[in-house]
Image (tube, rainbow, N blue to C red; front, side, top):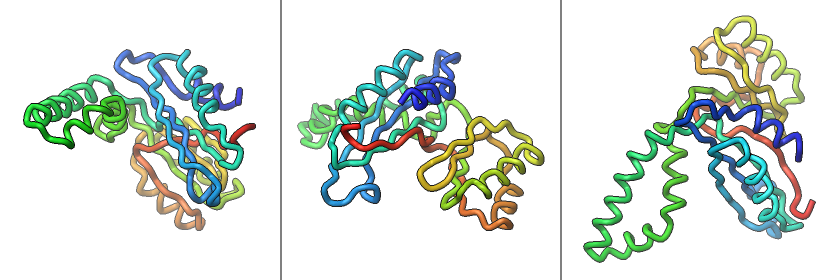
Length: 208
C-alpha cells in the first residue's frame, strides 16, 4: 500500500495550478468469477494530500472478500480550465432540458458529480502529453529491450517503467513513435500504444 502511494505521489505533478489528476479503483470481470461484485470509483486529486485520503477511501469501499480490485492513476494531468468550459455547456443544456420538463434532463441533474469526472477524463482536457506503452504477456525481457531502445534511439524522457499483472507499463513524454512500434513488432512484443489512459498502480483482494 505504501509503495502505491509513493508511486502516485512521485508520478502526479501539481506544480501547474490548472492541473489535477484522477485515481480510479475498479473490479474487472476477467479478474473475478461470478462471486465478485462490480465496482468503480473515481477520485479527483487536486493536491498531494488528496492522494493518501483518496487511496484510503477506495480501499475502504473496495472490501468484498471475494472480489479482486485494481487501482489506476490517470496517464495525463487533467486541465480544469478546459474541462470547466465544456462542463458549463453541459450544465446549460441540462438546465434547458429541465425547463422543458424532460425526464432525461432531470436524471442527468442528479449526477452532476459524475458528469464532471467524465468531462475531466475526455482526451481534449488532458493537461500533459504523456504516452503509455502497454507491454502484455511479458516477463520483462521484451519490456527491458523496449526501454533500452527508448533511451538510446527515441527523443523522449521515460517517466515510468512499471510491472503490471501480465506485463509492463512504460510511460514517456509524447514523441514520434513510428520507429518504436516497428521495433516492437520486430522483437515480437505485444504492445498497445495509448495517448490518454490510465497507469496501473496496484491490485488487491478485498478485505486484505
